[in-house]
Image (tube, rainbow, N blue to C red; front, top):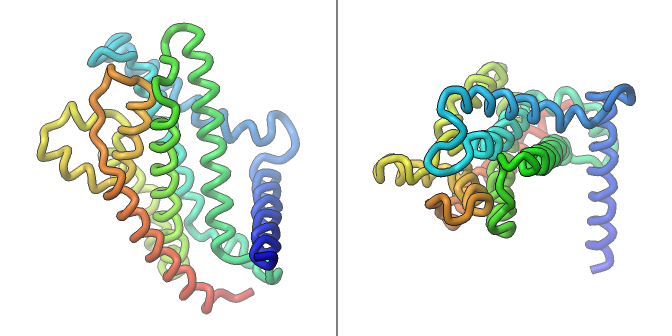
Length: 259
C-alpha cells in the first residue's frame, strides 16, 4: 500500500510538472499567459451565440439561445483542441521519455487535462457573466452537470489515446484529425437536443457518449425546461472500449519510439 501511495505521488508530480511545462511553452509568461486557454473558447462561444441570437431570436424551444449555444460550444471547443493536440504528441515530447518516471500516457493525459481545465474555467466565467444579464440560468442540478461533463471528458480522453499512437504510425491520421472534428459535430449534441429529433435519429445518437454527456449537462443546467435523453451505461461502455484500444496502441507504439 505504501508503494502504491508513493507511485501515485510520483505520478501526480510528473503530471504537474508536464502541465507547467506545457502551459509555459504554449502561452509564455507575458500578457495574460495561461488565461488564453480560457479566452479562446470564450471568444468562439460568444461570437457564435451572438450570431445565433440574430438568426433565431433570444429564445428557442423555451430556453435562452445564448445559454444553449455557450453551454454546447465550449465543450465542443475542448473536444476539438484535445483531438488536435493529441496528433504527433509523442514526437514533440519524445526526448522527455529519457526520464524513467515519464510515460507516453502522461503526455496525452496532460494535454486533455489542460484543455478540460481551460474549458471549465470558460464555462464558469461565461455562465457567471451571462447570468448577471439574465441570459444564463443558475444550474438546476449541479450533480447532473458534473456527471455529464465527466462522461464527455472521459470519452475525449479515450479517443485522444487512440489518435495519439495512430498519428505516429501514419501521417494520414494527422491530416484527418481536423476534418474528423468537424464530422463529429453532428454526433456531439452541441447544437440540438435529442428530444428535438426523431426517435430513430435519437437512438443512433445514443451510441455517442458525447451526446449523453451533453444531454446530462443541459439537464443539469436548464432543469425541467428540457427533456434529456441519455444512456450512461452505453456511454461508459463505449468510452471504456475506446480507452482499452488506446492503451493497447500506446503500448505497441512505445516499443518503436526512439528516445
